[in-house]
Length: 404
Image 1 (cartoon, rainbow, N blue to C red):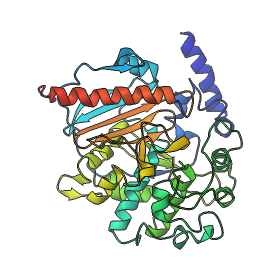
Image 2 (tube, helix red, strand yellow):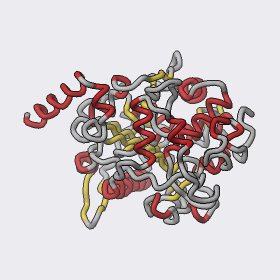
Image 3 (cartoon, one colour):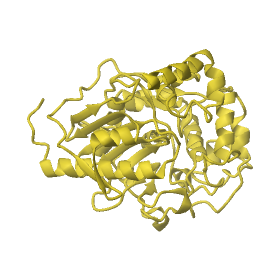
Image 4 (cartoon, helix red, strand yellow):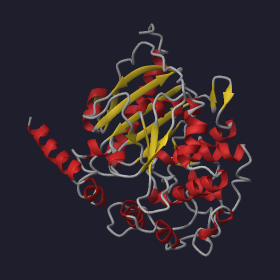
C-alpha cells in the first residue's frame, strides 16, 4: 500500500507537469518508481511519430512453457522470478524455434499491447534499416563518407568518418559516453533533444578524439547521425522506414512510435527513441534469428545479419572494447556481440532493455526493465547470466513440451 501511495504521488507530478518533468527527467522521471510509468508513456511527454502496423499481423504461436531455469550469479543460484524482482523486469518474452515459450509482464503498467521505450536498443533497429537501404541501392556503400548524405556536418568531426565507422562505433568523434558526468556530451545532446535546443550545434561541437576506424567508443550521437543518413538517403523518416520495411513485412501486431526532438525540424533519434511492444521486438529478433527472413521473404540482407554477429577487427572482439564497453561484450554493426561458438548477439538499451538473439540455438529473448540507473554493471552481468541460462535450458530440453 505504501509503495502505491508513493507511486500515486509521483505519477500525479508526471500528469500535471509532464513537460517540466521530462526536462528534469534525470532527477525524477528516469528513477524508480516513476520510470515504470515514464518508460511506457513516452508519447505523453514528447512529440512522436507512429510506426504503422500492417492490416494483418503474423501470429506468434505458443508452444508449451519454459523449463525451470536456475542461473548462477556471484556464487548463488536464482530463479527467473528472482531475476525479475532483482533487475526490475517490466516485460519478458522468450521465443524458441519460432514459438513463444514464456511471456510475462511484471511491470506495473506492462501488458502485451503496451509500448516500451527501447532506448539504445533502437540503434540495432536503425542498423537493420541501413542494411535494407544498402540492398535497395539508396545508400551506395558503408565506405561512403557521412557528409555525402549530411552536408550540414561538413567542417565538424563527422567530416571524415564513413558510415561503416559509425556502425561499429569507431568514428573517433567525442569522448566517453558517461551519464554520471553532468556536462558530458550525452547530457548536452539530451537537453537539446528534450528542451528544443539545437541538436546540430551539439553534434558539430564534438571534438575529434582519434582517427576514424581505430578505436571503439560507444556513442549515441554516432547512431543519431546514422538516422540522419538513412532519412537523407531514403527521403523517408525513421518511422516511415520502420513501418514499410520492418513492421509490415514481419507482420507486427501493434503500432510502434518514435519520440521526436522537441525543437524543429523534429526528428526521431536513430540511437534511442523507438517504442514498441515486447511482442513486436520479439518479431524483430525472429527476423534476425532466421537470417533476415520472414517465411520465404528476405527482409534484411543475410550478409547484414552475419555482419551483426561479429566483425573481424580485433578491437571489436569480446573483451577488447576498453572503457566504453563491458568485458563480456564485443561490438558490430550497432549490436553487442557475445562471441563463443554460437556467436549470439544482443541489442541493449539503458535501464535494462535487451533483445537477445541466438540464431544457432533458435532463441530470441526480450527483456524490458526499469533500472534506477542508466548503466548498472551488476544488473547487466546478472541479466547476461540469466539469459544465457535460459538458452542453455531450452537447448537441453529441446523444447519438446506439447503445444499449450
